[in-house]
Length: 222
Image 1 (cartoon, rainbow, N blue to C red):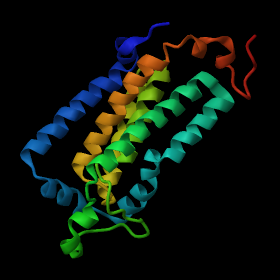
Image 2 (cartoon, one colour):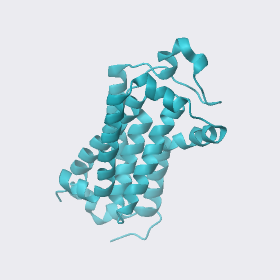
Image 3 (spheres, helix red, strand yellow):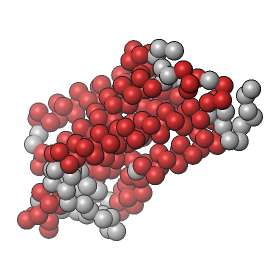
Image 4 (tube, helix red, strand yellow):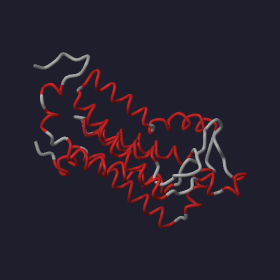
């Protein structure tokens, strides 16, 4: 069964079109504004409600959240879907970590070390200092969004998953964990790597066998 890149993109077309528009807007903003201007534009707009919301919402981009979805897929949907999500997460995360250590970029708290009095930090959030580029949470959020869109029969879900991923990326800037560039690069890494991986791995015949369509708590196929 040959899926191919075009096959993957056809199944996530709504998500992908929205993502391309999002990317154009992000690149335009980067051409107009500096890193510092974008960072402080986000950091200066905060509230207690937003602090609480993004403090917890950012976990959508955490690997544990994706692993939890994998467990649900194993229990109720199919081993093949669980494998596709788990392997996409693993491959995109490995590439993200390689990039993080290759660039070894400072995070906002280290970058603005002499101006911390001007920065709003959310209470009880641990702020990292290094390996900022790209944002790992953004990689995972967008990778997971691509896979879930790929699974969805209704294309409208692509819009939902896209919005959820964008907010996950924004949460990393709001919490001062990452810069705008980190989040955008993370989204690009997550989307491109996952599309390429799905086009390769979902073409493997074993994933489409009856046994791989079973789940632990689902009536087994022959």
